[in-house]
Image (cartoon, rainbow, N blue to C red):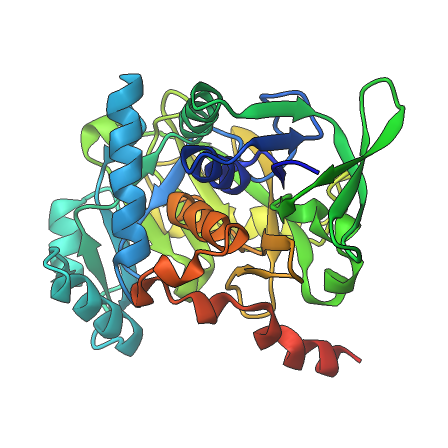
Length: 382
């Protein structure tokens, strides 16, 4: 029995493994697919980073600090500030609440009326009754670069990445064992001091009792060609966050030349091993309608490119970051919002695994992410 195994080399598992290795723990990071791959939730070129929407700034401040230090260590751009518009009606209680959190932390957050939005961003077309909270510090995390940099840092601290699939887990004894299947399709049981399960949509394969509480969605990721110039990050085009009103958010062109990335925060349920499921068309149609209505400078007839991202959802859209017995820690259900917090989420998982959770400040709100909060949904499901 030796060290810690982190199952899942997405952004959450990779940060958890790096924190463990930095703490001097002998750590194995297990990934079922050859890296890099596009099968999970951490691939692709970009993710949004926003300050607006958190009850405290502790996890976001820590995460941004780690992204910045990683960027400096690897001499590669991981984050680009673009600013972010978060739409809502005037006197929107949700926006007022979270704007006050951002401002109390000494950060800037301005309210823009419809006329100010149009003056500053003339390529947008929103109704007069909509304003927006302007978060000037929001921006783009370059996801693939971020994941690669975390894994390089993990290897540099002495960590080990192993390409094998975790078939099942036994944590009923004094140790915890996991059955691993390698590329040769031979399996073996390995024993570890502790295990962190951070394998996204494959979580319920290892922990079947979570199946009633988690569902996996195949999110359509669409890219729309600009008819008029000015929609890129280099042009000062912002991130658009309209998930509460329309289920939509978008990132300026930066991945593909002249293509704006727009996502619908929803999609059909899907098996992660067979994710090319029918049923995404209705969500793409909603995005197309949104583009035609609010982004007239784009060609809204059909997306130029379509991709898929897997969201692992909990009933309340908050993640589970908790212990499962004495030797297993789980991080799952990040519901499409995990990337920006991943340095802090990885830290929380590592601290839980090492028995050091008390060292996390109250602003991390660890009780908020306990598994037992979801039991009421399990009862209702029955």
